[in-house]
Image (cartoon, rainbow, N blue to C red):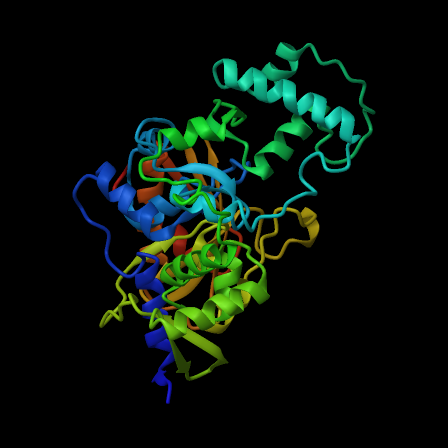
Length: 412
């Protein structure tokens, strides 16, 4: 008979798996601590919105506090390389050891050049690969100039409006032939051959040692095992969603992991779906963490899980017209101990040196210390972002209490 857990126990398992159950260390954050956090998460999602901070920086702040973002640049761009870019949940930094498995299962053909004329695509791809093989990493614009490619594109074209070189680059990226060596200050990829990236990633084997074709089913088992580790507890859909893998193949992998003792079927009171707990998942006696979570944090990837586990209904409203937004543009859930107790719309006004809480809302039943704890978390974030003050706009039911709590903080 499956083991039975309470909803609070399930929450603590999930938070511990994500490294969100403990009070942050007070000592300076080391590169080793950042590396351990990334190893636990397996991936961090990339997004271009920079109203607060780039999305891949935020999960490390949520778990570690004030850390040096240059550590991530080194992890993603120097030898030994600990992070590389590829499709996972969405565009993500992944652990390089996951790349050989992911490339067998990712299918983002809509992103690249599959609809291009095949002859043109092949010609451009050959020239792109030759240029990247012969020289340093290049942006799409630099490659376009290097190849002498000229193309008229309609100015009113919707979407990305990419030229042929950029479309072919994304096609080759999806195929796993090119990757990002680094990013520019404006967040453009500097493309290079994936083989060069993996050469600086110790222990990554892209082909089976015996020369046989890669085993896609075994790759799926490894991916679902990693996803289940990152969740601690969850459903088949939770695990499949982590790396955006097909449900049917993920279901077969889950069965194999149950048979191998890596996953244990469990029941959770109030969470009425088939659930599995990973063999490595711990159950802490209490959850004492506190964190502002990125809209792209891996704890909030799967919205149905978030609502069933935490009772927190969440939607990203970036692409919602301003007049129709309920909570704001870049809204971060606020985790306090074992609950998500509030949400705050944040903006970093770098010119003014201000961290602005544009709207602040408490969840039903939020504890009495929510505003005080959130104020302290905002102060920590402002210090991390090198901003001088916190401004609380009078929007949302939590705003008056939060403004009062912020006024009582020590000056930055």
